[in-house]
Length: 321
Ligand code: PMP
Image (tube, rainbow, N blue to C red; front, top):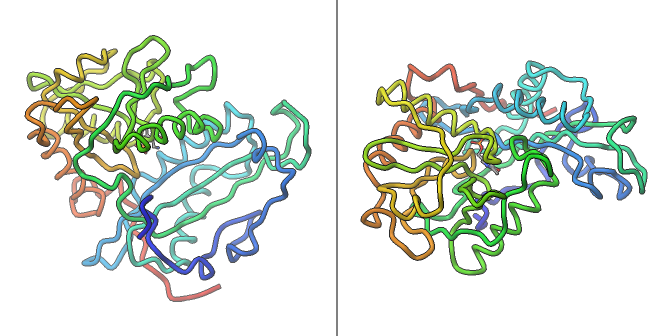
């Protein structure tokens, strides 16, 4: 397994969805003239499929919500793709079946400006396309007890590039922050927004627990509208009878929190035990993080009947196209 969580696999056997058909990955190539390659004019998703050995099936977690967010991004970036959320779910299920996965996977849909021309700084009148990849995927963050730093990079502000959608170009911001953090020996970066308030991790939303209450920054603080964030909020209400408080959070509040954890599709729900070389609480994952994480892991593999509607079960098919 490589450090970014992508398990080793034979890439040549992989099929992808490209230009409206299922094709081997070797046949799915774009021109160097492609608009999105130059300008980051695309939106993508990261969806997990979690292998459940007892079921002999992959459970794709909250797939429809991911595609609704992708289509929101398409509206903002004027990406006209000929698929509804239902179509995208069907294409995804078929690709997962065709690839015969029997381990945890990462599903990467990408809608992008596919027009082949060099200098054009508009969105209108440019062709768009959609592609989809599925790959085996393991642990993303490489640790289940995160040591984080506050990034010297700030989260982009909504009037610059909207952070609430997964626009490709915006990830230069995340990648600068994550690079700085990891080169400095930390697991992950926490970004502050333009105002100096806590925004999120490079690829995760953030939660803080203080005196038994759970807090997270509002979307207006330049936060991605995270599906795992929403899952945590729904679980907290339904299982603990406690609403997560969404309000602006100061950096120093994180230092004084009892618990901090990150949430994201790739990152799952992972406790932060240290921030800027200060222990969070007693420096160990706290009870609320642990309990939420336990519930979350049970749910995402399709083991909790109450939340099975969040999982789309796909069994590997041995039929090769
Ligand atoms: N923030 C950012 C910047 C992200 O890239 C991600 C990962 N998609 C998240 C938060 C978490 O979002 P989700 O739970 O929908 O994966």
